Length: 425
Ligand code: SR1
Ligand code: MG
Image (cartoon, rainbow, N blue to C red; front, top):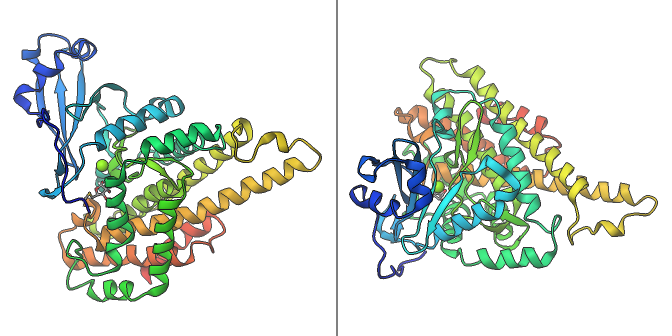
């Protein structure tokens, strides 16, 4: 874990009183906000684990300003953290923008001295996690996210482009090590051993957590997925695609917060979203106003999980068939009799492997949110510890099964149909 970080001379944390003065020097931003800077309303609205986030409203429009702090917001100065994460975030946005269109916010300006990104203020969007806690249905979110992960993953992979371009991008994200370190420690290591950063609902989950930490098969599965997290440079991944990194309205879905981006396994992004949907499913009995109130909503959550995988599968397969012009599986080799079926079989095998990866990484993401450092509001918001522990136990049961048996599910229907029984086990 990083214990020091160099803060360049000239870096200052942004403040509500002075932010407008800087933004007024940026012509495109000034025009978007309209009117005189003195009339702009500036509010700090960040509630994530890492950064400062400001919303600025002018007479004609609004912007969002995100600034990296030299430490983790959730921990304070005792946990220093590189400012460069802002650089990688805006680079990710630039890399995927040609492929995902308006599914990310528009970036107006990046300031390398302030480590600050000025971007579109997404309104009236809400953070998906909050919507799931409130029991709101966003009918397109699963489909939109599946489409997003397929496009971002396919077009930054060597299925779509020459390996030289991919290697250039691997190099340009390879310095994002402090953020990858957070994931290595908090997702793939700490939850499986005693660590002072960990916490869980005590004493209710003590035995469950001890069982997990004594389960050699589960630990080996997590370690193998962690090894591949570091070693599989398949595509540019978002790296933190949980439901707090997605903003929604009933009709629109946007992906935000890609500061953990690097070249890694595509299954990690798939698993992040699936795992957080299933965590939301597990939390519903604890969020319901009366028993049974959220049962239909739980079904809707699982339907979104199916829509997510189905959209990813169909889009990724379609893109590979139509735009597979990269150095991986060179299309020129497959123009003879019987070649198309061999290529199609390879595509199917690739998607089957991605499906198993998705289940495995979903499991890792669920486990870390129950027994590790950073939890999720879906579960932490359940005030009654006994009820919370029951919800968390169901998450651990589903996740442990997926971790160890991720190769065994033959379809998304089969995997999701087993969820209620696993939760009750
Ligand atoms: C120490 S930062 C904790 C978590 O917040 C981010 O959203 C990532 O998920 C990270 O693991
Ligand atoms: Mg984030």
